[in-house]
Every structure is written in structure tokens, then in C-alpha cells.
Image (tube, rainbow, N blue to C red; front, side, top):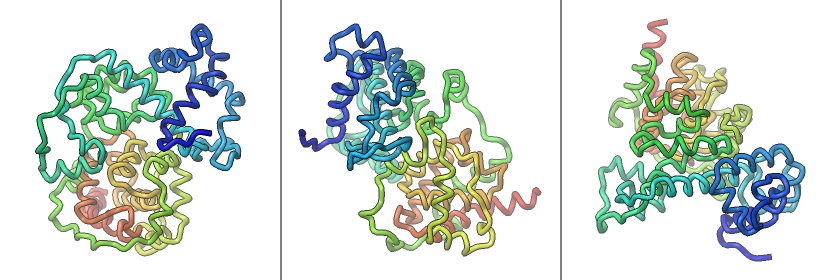
Length: 379
């Protein structure tokens, strides 16, 4: 059996080979072409790709031989468990969706444009490092950016928000967005499940008036009354931590719905329990039911938090803001720019994935203290 350095290569080979052999028996359009052409046809035709995903869901039993973990045991219904290739089923679906979207964008938008979004170095370091560099005001000092297809530039902006098979029919609508619109929508793209909702979001929806105090608190300068968190020692062995991609797949299901039960389970861990018990405000708080997948994605991918930290953060924020204001920052209709400001403030204060949950909770409580005071005054 070949030894793959990159799991993506193994995934692609299996999709092109044994998986496509099964799929050709279920999707007539694929059966009409040579086996070697079926994989590219599926990725090049969004209608056929949608049929492939539907066939997988309708005839799940025919794909069971491929749904095994590294020990060659069936994964059952756990689509977040790593397969033998090292990626979960949900992650593989995301890879396929992104591949199809990239091909579509490049076909529809072939005009060459300057790659001004990020340097090659920043591309490798990912979204989080790019965000940090932008706040520092640093600029690439290398040669002028190279020319790339406009579709490729668009893909690079939206790729971080393409994870689910229900997004396949929306790819043409995504291709009509511009870079500015994608940046403004951010991870809320993962909340918009039809073209009408996407168009409404592009048109812009203001935050409700009640949320303005919270927005001002989050967007305040980092050197205000919020105390800086001292560098925290790791409380877990870093080698035991899952990579952010796995955490994201565990917290959001294949339909883009946040798994509240997973977050609730995380609150049962010793450090999380200690964080909540340390303060009466958050001691009896709960995981709110209206957490948006976009908010989870930002907390995982930009803030690089673990599920236990995210659970404590959400419980603390809910306890401070209440059920009416909480969704404007962390809900499905929240403004992603506000949450990004929270990320900036947190990182400036020294919050990392190794920060103890209690320290993180104290920080969030301090930041929202003024907003809570105004909410209680109004109430």
C-alpha cells in the first residue's frame, strides 16, 4: 500500500478509484463516461456533484467499506471521527466542496488580477497570522504581487468558509460576490443556506439597537480598563491537543449546526468546572442554544481555542450579556466584524489555546462588565 506524505493525496486517490466505482453505479451521468473521467466530471459539474452527495446519503451502506478508522474499524455514524486517511468524513466533504468551488471560480473568472490579498509567506501561515500582521500594520516587502486568475483570488477569500455539502448549489452565487463582500460577511457565510439569504446578507443587516453598547465595549481600544492577562502556563500536554480543523469538525455537524451537546460535555471537565465555580455569575449559567456556526469557526480558526475554552467563553458571555444581547455577538445573525474585534482584544491580552479556562472566563467577564451594568440598569 503506498505511503502518502500528504493525506490529501490519499483522499484524492480513493475518491478517484474505489469511491468513484461505487458512485458510477448510482449516478447515471458518471456511468456514461470512462472511469478515469468520472471524478473530474463530478467536480466540474455542480449539478452532478450534488447528485453524488445525495447518492452517498441515500445509499450510505454501499460506502461502508471506506468508512473505517486508522484501526480499520467502522466509524458508524460519527462523521467527525478521523478515517484511515487521518481526516474525518466531514473534512473530506469539505475538501470536495472546496475543490469544486475552486474549479468553478477559475472557469467563470479567468481574468488575471494582482494577488494583493496576502504574500506567499502569509498564505502559508494562514488566516490567524494574517490577521495579526494586519493589526501591526506591516506590509509585504517582497516584489510586487504576481498575477493570478480572478477566480483564484476569490477562492482564497472564501475557502475558509466552504465546509458543507449543502453549499454546492450556492457556489454560483458565491462566485458573484466580490472580495470586499466576502470579507464583510466572513464566517456568517456558513449560516446562509440559500441564495435569498445570501443576497439579504450582502445587502447588509444592522445590529439591533440593544447591541450597540456591547459593540462599543468589544471594539474599544485594547489598552482600556480590561486587564492584560499574564502569560499562562499550559495546563494540558500540547501533544494531546487536536488540530483546529478537527475541533471545528467536532463542534459543527455536516449541516452546519453547532453541536451544543459537545460543548456541554466539555463543561464537565475539571478545569472548566473550576472556571465556572469560581464566580457566582457564571456558576449556574448554561450553554446558550443559539450559538452560530460562524462564531464557532472564528473562535476555533482565528482565536485557536479548544472546545473546553470555547464552552467556558460562551457560558461566561451568556451570563454577562443575557439571552437578548448574546446572539448579537455569538448568534447566527451576528456581525462577524464584532467578534473579530473580540479576537483582537483577546490576543492582545495574551489569551491562547493554553490559557486556563478560569483565566479566560475572568477576561471575558471583565470585558463585558460595562455592558452588563447597562443591561441591568435598563432591566
